[in-house]
Image 1 (spheres, rainbow, N blue to C red):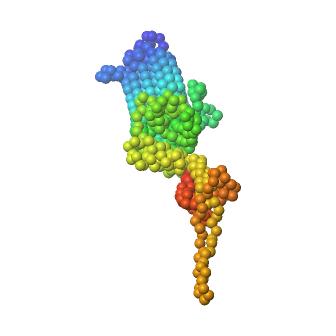
Image 2: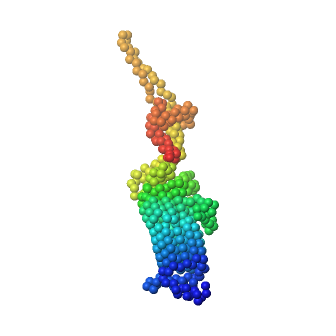
Length: 510
C-alpha cells in the first residue's frame, strides 16, 4: 500500500474497529502506526474489535501491550521474529494462536482471556511468559513446544483444561486451577511451588511427541529439545495441598516436598522415581550404603551435617541449594511418614518400606528424642536395618550361632555325659532295701582349649544351637556356662531369624 493510501486508511480507523490484516508483513513501525490509530482518547490504549492477523508476519518486536480485543482475535499461523509483547492485554472474545511461531521471547503476563482460547501447535524458540494470565475458557492449552521456559506463575484457569507442553522448564508457581486439569509434559522440569489445586490435577510424562492436528504420523517438531531426555521431573511441591495432586511417570529425584500438606493423600503412580542413596564403599569401615529410595531433603541434611561436606557430595549425596529450607531430622521424618502412607495406599509396599527406613533413620538422628528411644533405634538399625535388611540380620544370626557353638565346645559341654548311678545301703534280712538313682553334675572340661575342639563336641554344640533357634531345648547335659549360654541363645537367635524373615517379606509383599 502506498504511503498516502496507508495514511488515509489509518486516519479512517476508529478505536474498536474490526481489522483484517491476514498475511500482512508488519514491521515494528507499521504496527505502531496501526495501534496508534486505534487508541482510545480517554485511556490512551489501543482498542480493536475483530482482529484478523492470520498468516501475518511481524519483524522486530511486536508490541501489543495493554491492547483491548473486544472481538475475536485470530493469530493463526502468525510468525514473530522478535519479542511478542502482549502484557496487560485483554481478549474479551475468542483468541486463537493456532500454529503461531515465536522466534524470541513471548510475553503474555497479566493477560485476560475471557473467551475460548487456543494455544495449539505453537512453537516458542525463546521463553513463553504467562505470569498472572487469566483463562476463563481454555479447554486446551497446547500442544506447544518451547525451546526454553514456559512460565505460568500465578496464572488462573477457571474451567477444566488439558495442557500439553514440551519445554525445558515449566513453572507453575502459585498457578491456580479452579477446576480439573491434566498436564501432559515432555522434557520439562516442573515447579509447582505454592500452586493451588482446587480440583484433581494430574501431571504425567508423555512418552511420544504430540501429534499435529491429531493426525497419525505427523508430530510436533522438537528439534530444539533433541539434546534432552523426554523424562519429566518435578522440582518442588512446597506449599501445595497434595490431596488433589496425582503424579504419573514423573522423576521425583530432585523434588522438594517440604511445606506441602496432605502428602499422605498424594497419588504417585506409574514409574515415578525418587533419589537414591550412594552405594559406594566407606573409606574407613568395611560397609557400604544399601540402595534405597530417599527424599532429596535427606540428601541435603546429610551433606549439611557431614564432617566433610565435600566428601559427602563426592560420594553421591546432593548438596542443598541456597533457597531450600534447612530441615531438622524430625521434619524429614514427617515427610517420610506421610509419603510412606501414600505409597502404602497405592499398594507399593517395597518403596513404602524404603520410606519407613528413611523415617527411622531421621528419628535415630533426632537429638530432640529421648536417649533411650534413639539407643533402641540404633540397635534395631545395627541388627537388621529396621527389619528391612535380611542380609544384615542373617549375618548377625550366623555370627551368633558361631559364637554359641564356640562357647559350647570350649566351656558349655561337660567332659563326658553324666551317667545315672544307683546307690543303696545294705540292710539286715527282712528289711526293705532303699536304692537311690541320681545323675551327677556335669564336670567342666579341663585341659588345653585346643583339645576340646573335636568333631563329637562340635556336633553336639551344633545340635544345641539349632534347637535353640527354634525355641526348643536340646536335652543335652550342659555345664553351668552352657546352660546360661543356651538360655541366651534361645532368646536372641530366634529374634534375629524373625527379623530376617520380616525383611524378606517387606521386599516381596505387594
